[in-house]
Each structure stands twice: as C-alpha cells, then as structure tokens.
Image (cartoon, rainbow, N blue to C red; front, side, top):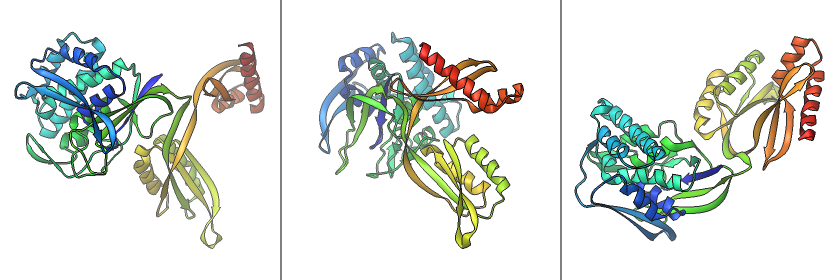
Length: 392
C-alpha cells in the first residue's frame, strides 16, 4: 500500500503542503494543468526552490491578477463541481471545503448556506486545496497519516480583526487531534492546512512503519531563526509491521480498593479504547498487598484514559511515560474442526507467519456447547490450521 506521512513540526498551510508534494516528486506542470481546469482567470502558480534554516524546500506563490473576493460555499462547490477535474478530485476538494463551511458556520453562528469565506475562500486557498488533492493522486497515495500539529501561538490578523492562535476555525478543525505549540509566537497551522489534514488523514501520531521512497519539504514565506519553516512529506510503501508507533503507558498503584472492582475497571478501560490493560500484584508501603494497573494508550487517548483511571479507582495519582510499540500485521482465518468452525489469529511480518493461535472465545463457546475439554477444541483447531498451511 502506498502511503504518505505529513510531518508538521512547523505547522502546515495549504501552500506549504502543495510545495512539499512538488518537492517530493509531483510534476509542477501537472499541478498547473489540473488547477487550470477550474477556469480561474488571472491565477498563476510559481514554484521556487529556497532554503529555510539551511534545509532546501519548495515555496509556492499563487499570483492573482485581481483582488480576492468573498465567496459562498455553494459558489466554491460550483467552481469545483463544474470543472473538468476527475470525480475523485472533485469529491475530495468539495469535502474539504464543506468541512470548512461547517466550522465557519459554528464560529459565526449562522447556517452553513450563509457562510461567506474570507481567507479560506480566496482563490489561492481554492488552488491550495485542489492542488494538494491532485498531488496526492499523482503520487498514488492510498492512505495519509499525520504528525501531531504544531499550531503556533500569539495572535494573527484576519478579516474580522486580530484573532488568537489557533484561529477560531482552526481550533474547531483540530478538535480531538493531538496538538501542541512550539517555536515563534505566530500562526503555524492555518485553517486551510488544518482542513486538508483533518479531512484526509487516517490518524495522527508517530510515523507509521514504511519504506520511504521520497521526501519533500514545503516552505512557508517567512524565515524563523533557528527553526526551518517547513512542512515535510514522506512518501513510500507501508512496512510489514502494521504499527510502529509511540504510545503512552499510564499506571496507578492501588492498595485500598476492593479486588472485586479491578475486573470492572479493566473492562471499562478496554471499552474506552485502551490498547491493552494489565494488572500486576505488588507490595506497597507497610507491606500492604495491592496492584499496579497499567494501561497502553494512543497519544490522543492519554488524557481521557488517565481521567477514567482516576475516576474508577481509589488511586490519588497516576504516572505516564512514553514507549515504542511495534505490532505485527494481524488477520483472521477460519478452519473446520470435528466440533465446528474456529477462527485462527494469524500474525505476519513481510508476508511470513510469525504466530498463529485459535481464538479463545471460539474454543470456549464450542467446548461448552459440545461438552468437550477446552484443550481438545484448541488442539484440533491448531492442527487444522497447520494442515491448511501445509497443503498451501
């Protein structure tokens, strides 16, 4: 599977993303040709190589022969929909603008039909969004992944006056997405950039396992001292391990809670999205027996699962630390046994099987239904899988 990873260590804007895609190998003439299908008069794209804090990147300038005018969502959808772009490009581009429209409607408390875009509705933003969608298609990208977003800080001047960073639209767009603020007190992630990545990205976090084939840097207009004002795109094939990501480990020591509650807390954490939960017996102060509850969590779930641990147990504090998690690609394969069908969990890496085991719940159910020993069902299922593997 062909994938790309967007590294937004200095934020992301529409023009920076499009510059990065060209820097990663997209033919700029192909971008210009596809954007030309929008029929936007007086619009010219200029891609130039430049340096940002010693790193080479591509800067995009969208030159417009006349002033930007405010446009309604329906007008933008009409411009894209009536063009000769491909159906997938139209759908993606309109979906991004629709997301922007819904956010703007919430910010200004008006129906989405009454939203008139300012910065994001300008011609250069239409070019950025459509151009980025073209770039992903040219590179054959099937899935897009993104780092946590560096939003910046301070204030930014917009059509409605001076706004805090992140701008109100950006703040809504990145809801439930891992974000942070680092570097100069300026806007680093724009509404256009946020709309593109939050609409198209599969997930936000560390770079997935991949074989990198090309790397591109898209440059912002401003240069920052000691920090490259760049968005990075890494393109390649998905690696053999489905996950190779940074996760958070959340732990709590408990010695004053009824053991009966532990099972309930364990279930609640897994239902809430924990990757795994373990309970370890320990001896605590004054040799009191207790337990350590350990939770593996995705970065975006850390706060929520930590709060659940504080709420559902009697602990007065939790600790967290980061760890690297690598998980083999997993699949399920059904086999027939004398007692019925059992699913086999199969773990592979680069096409080779590393582990295979019958599903516990299947074996448990059949053992009870057929009144046979659990181990007999498990062994028959494992033998059936090995026989299939030998035959193939």
